[in-house]
Image (cartoon, rainbow, N blue to C red; front, side, top):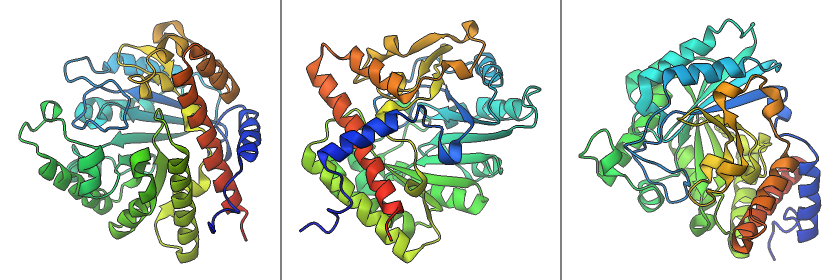
Length: 364
C-alpha cells in the first residue's frame, strides 16, 4: 500500500480543486499578493539546449534593445500595485551583461517608482557566472534563479551544451558542467540571494529526491522543484512525481535543514496557466506561455498577443485571470485533440500538485 495515498487526490478531487484554483482570479496570491510582475526576454541565445525547454533559441537573432527594455519598465511603473517585480529571462540573460546592469539601475532609480518595493529576478544557467558577476548581483532587492537540475549525469542527459552558442567555442559537456558547479560556489561566496530551480521531465519522474539531495549536498540556500510542462505525462509518471514531491516535503519538514524549500509556499499552479506578461526581443507584449511553450504550441503567440509595447499604457488591465487563460488556451486547441489533451493533462497535473502541497501544509 502506498503510504502517500492519503495525500494524493482522486480524479474528482483534482477536478474540484482545479475549479477552486480557477476561481482565485490571478496567481498573485499569498506572499506575492498585490505584486505586479513583468518578464523581459533579454535574448534568444543560450549555451544549452535543454530537452524540456520549448523556447525557440537562436544564436543569430536580435537581443532586447536597451531602449525597448526601458520602455517596458516605464510601462510597468504605470501599475497601481504596491510591489513590483522584474524578471530577466531568455535564452541566457547573462550573455547581455552590460544591458542587464543598465536596466537594474534604470528601474531602481525610476522617477515613477514612488518608493514602492521592487524586486528583480535574474534567470541563469550558471555558465556565464563568475566571482565578479556574482558580487555585482549581491543586493537585497535581487534574487538569482539558477536553473540547475542536479549532477553532471542529469545535465548531460537533459541539458546538453550547444557549442555554436557558447561564448567559449571549446566548451564540452564536461567543462561546461564544471563551470556550472563552480557557479554554486561563486553565488554562495558572494552572499547573493539565490535558489536552485530544478525541472523534472516525465522520463526522470522517479528521481525527485535526487534533486533535493544534490541541493543539500551543495549547500544550496533554497530549492524549487518543478515538473516539465508542455509534455505528456503518463499517469504512472504523474504518480512517481507526486510521490517524490511528498517524500521530499515530508523529509524537509522532519529534518528542518537550513535550505529553504520554496514548494511549501508555492502559489503558481497550474504552471501551464502562467499569467505573467513578457516583452519579447521585438517589443511585442505577450502572456509568457506564448514564449515558454512556443516550439510545441506556436499557435499561442497569436492567442496570447497583447499588442506592441508602444501601444500600451495601463499595465494592470492587461493581466488575465487564470480562468481566462484556461479558456483561451483550450479554445486555441479545440480542433487539435492531441494538443488539447496535453494542455488539459498539464493543467490537471498542476491542480494535483497544488492539492498535495495544501494537504501537506495542513498535515499534523
